[in-house]
Structure formats: C-alpha cells, structure tokens
Length: 242
Image (tube, rainbow, N blue to C red; front, side):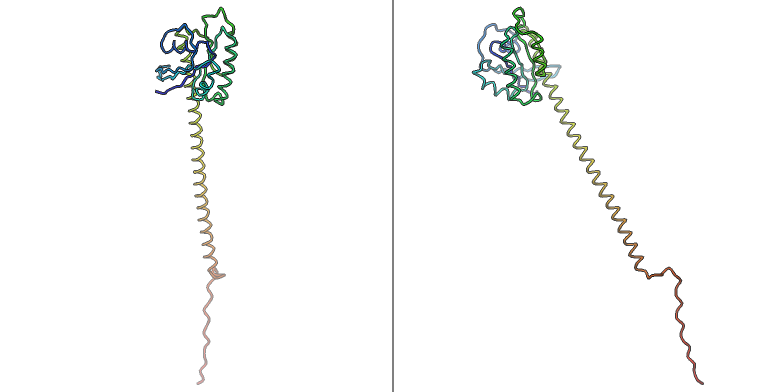
C-alpha cells in the first residue's frame, strides 16, 4: 500500500492535535498541551482503495518553525487548520500557506484542504464561512468547517484530502504518459521518413547509374552504326600479257 505523508498546519490551540487524536484513536481530548511534534501512522481505505497515512501534527508556535519546515518539504498532503472562533488564527494560516507555497514551488507539488475547526463554537464565530471558502479558492483546494468532537466530520476531511492527492497523482501520470507516447510517435515518424528517404535515394541512384551505363554503351558504338553496312572494297584485276 502506498504511504501518504500528511501534515497538519495551523496556529497553536486551533485543534490540530484534537483532530489527529480523534482520527487515530476515535475520541476527543478536551485539554490543550502545546505540541512540538507528534507522528502517527494509520492504515485507511478511501473509496475501496487502501493506503497508509503518516500523519504529522506540527507545532503551532513560531519557536518551532524549523521543525515545521522539514515537514513542509516532505509532506504530500496538508490540512490547513484555523479556528472559526479566532480571526488571528485565520490570518496566521494565510502566512503559513504562503510559506508552504514558497517551499513547494507551486500547487502541482502538493494537495491541501482548508479546515475551519471548532464548529461547535459557532455562537462565537469570528471568521465567516465565506471568508474561509474564499481563502480555500485562492489556495486551490477544498474547504470544510468541522468540529474535532465529531468523528464523522474529521474522517470526511481526511478522505477529501486523500482523494485530492490521488487525483493529482493520476493527472500527473496521465500527463507523463501522453508526453512519452508523443515522443515515441515522433521518433517513429522520423525513422519512417528517414527510411523512405534512403529508399528513394537508393532508387534514384540506381536509375541514374543505369542511365549512365546505357549512355556509356551507346557512346562506345561507332557513329552511324545504325546505317547500312559498307560494301567490302573490290580487288583490282591484273592483266597478263600473252
């Protein structure tokens, strides 16, 4: 089964660890402890296709930025998480995304999903649904609002990310295959053209050679050879005196 490295990104206290533990262990942790780095592995099946996720729960504090950088380079899928009850976490996520984009180079090198967490605190909302959706559109990735307390919502967020990763892999493979087929076709056409040219050149050379030989044969015959044969010279008669 393919191993898919997935990285959870976001400010501190947005619920990254709660999401990871809910997904891995199936329960919600209500207390908050600052994370430096936690790594989990989970076999999953999405759309009847198995995979193994290596899930990295990164630190949200700037002090651990160096730890986060190494996972930006190695990650294949990213959950970009903010709290809908904390507008500052939303602004911080934009900066984290900009850092991710600089590290990866372009969108083709990564798959991501923007997740507005703490939907259970909707009464304290500080970031609107439309704001989150607009940012996700800018980042060219899906968008969801969830509560880490709801296991079904958490599982769906990971499933959407896995599908996005597979779709991107499939598109990349198809693009590479088409390029290879095009190169093969071009090479075949070039070879065919070369062979045709050689055959044509050979035939032309042969015709020229035959024509030259025919010309040599004609020139070796004496001029006027097509006229009637000349009569043999008559011998002079001698007179004998008696």
